[in-house]
Image 1 (cartoon, rainbow, N blue to C red):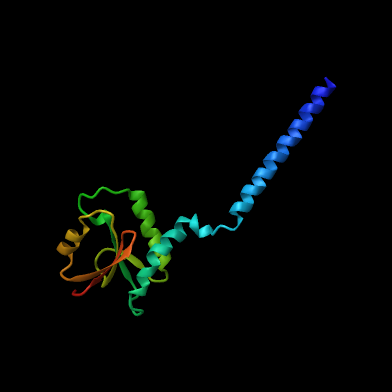
Image 2 (cartoon, rainbow, N blue to C red):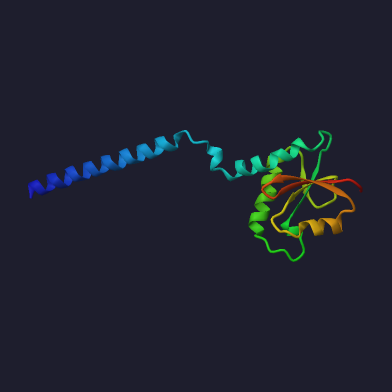
Length: 142
């Protein structure tokens, strides 16, 4: 019985050492990874920030339209709301407001019919494709 207890104790210590070493190796491998690679806010910021390269410095407020503005469009409300919130955060201190009522508008579209919708709702505009479904729309007439 004494031998069995010693074997169990040695096995428990060996297993604990194995788990500790495994966790240490995993932590070391992940230690130097860029945290922004895993952070959804930072990922979104990298997608949206390039918009500012095309917007004049004197523009203080940007508009925002997305799939939720397209009539009959099916979209994930939580996803759309999060992306709008992330956009506001990424472009601060410039306010980002929903709608087409601004000269410069950020478009966040995944549905193909958005160009038809823009044509119906804006008399004249230019559009720059930023990537990842992000567009910068410049109203050329009010």
